[in-house]
Image (cartoon, rainbow over the protein chains, first blue to last red):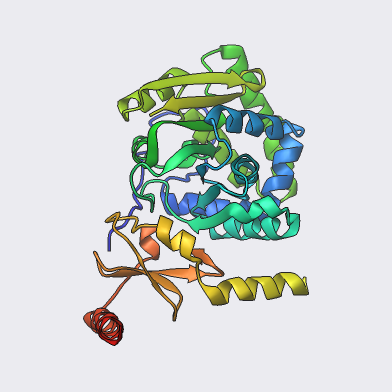
Length: 253
Length: 87
């Protein structure tokens, strides 16, 4: 049986104390473990700002009424619900994630929110590296805090390219790996002194220490633009938001 | 809570709705999938693998797939032939 699980090589040096979360199944288990407190921690740690960044990501995607939309690495569904509001009753939104626990929470939220337009959402457990969709299906794709966590970012971009209609956009929101020393230092300080201590209260210190490693291993804005262009996108632009702590890559097929 | 459980059971019972089964393809071969009612699953005939549906959510991570043995695929072929003959 074809298996997607493989390890990325350990980086030779790192300033950061690191919990090794190398292969896909480690990351899957990590997201299963944090699922119950994920939403609360997002609110707490970003002081509610993540809601604004997510609205921006959806705007950038170009999603509109009647569209077929995909939210990748949907987690507990924040972006999916925003996309659902854009698509309306005639549209369709797929929320895809590889964590059963996160999808279960997303599905429960859909039921509890019980807004009629959320009936246009379907949840799928799937892998961003092998999307279960045919070519050129979607009018827009969003991906929030997901690209940094996939083990093969190039392949993820290629799959997004494949399932997008020509002329359509992908909008990828994530932490920004800043080239500005002050921003990078501030981000590191925030994680060490705010994020991890808060996560420790919930018993999730190691899981949130992973955040620092994953940002360290992530790509800068320029590198992300190149990644998109290499995957075949005709246009790619990375926007820094949230005071440079966050970034949003917008790419057009 | 009772309403939620009832809703989840209903979703699990109906498997996956038709619209979704039209949109989804096999994550590996990218070919069409066939819905199986019992046990609720999506069958990729192109590669002989079945993917489960749990609580109404299709599980299409490649490692979720179960390779069908020849008996299973033959049973499905016979069922398909029967339904064609009966029409």
